[in-house]
Length: 362
Image (cartoon, rainbow, N blue to C red; front, side, top):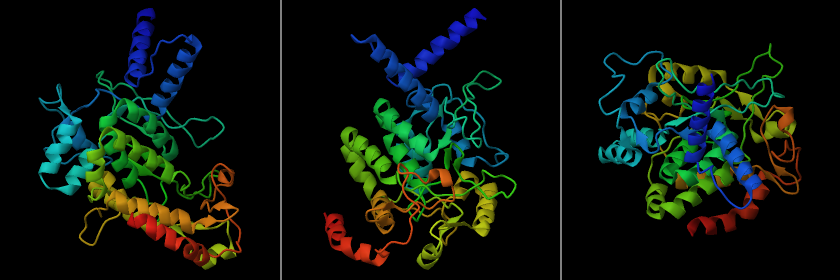
């Protein structure tokens, strides 16, 4: 037992070290606090198990999840698995094929481990566990967490693994909705949301949108500092998707009638998404075009969409309109479930249109 504890301690130290969590300065208490912060960060957002090494077969299998069983003939291992390929090599090979959907999938693949969901015991809907090893002893590659927690922690992780930042950005954009919001959870299997359940008093739906811009901005800034040319090339390429969360914002007239019922659940969209997931895996949770393909967009369009979304939700001297049915989200840190404002959306848009247009041109 003592030997097992020692082995587990060493492995935990190695995980923290990969995220630059071990340091030695003239302030030991500060060093300990730093290590603790990094450990908590890794336990939320995960850590890259083998640095930049990626197993192509595992990468391919991840696209099929959560389909119950892979198609016949799909390999479960390969001779390349032991060595793997460098992440940038996998992305470059995918880009060389000219298949944008394949390149998107390769960029989004992040071989993280040791990640768990937010587990605040005061919130009964949070259940979590950290799965580290399979029955055969191999490490489990998985991550899951509330949207806000995942990208908060990836921002810090990006400084230790800057080569994955473009993948983090791709994951961010593809997990955002076309109306400027984000789903409740991010997992290796894609995105997740909550559904209405009359038997569960904690079952509420709601959008987050108040953290979108700052999280994306931080990831873009990190990529700019490490690979400015990669950022320039990425901004105009259609390599990103939209999440198809089955929530819909009420028309403006309905918002004025009941400002606390601004978002509704769309069961027909939920049914369509679930059917696509069974056929196509995690991509079934994204927006599809008229050609039955995942609709692709570029980061520049995403940034403008977020700007417009935040602008039309702004109520001067009040805050950003928070579209949620969760009463505990209605606090100053998250935003505001707005009441009728003397400023109409058309007035707000007219007031900023000139300056916004100038900014976008530059």
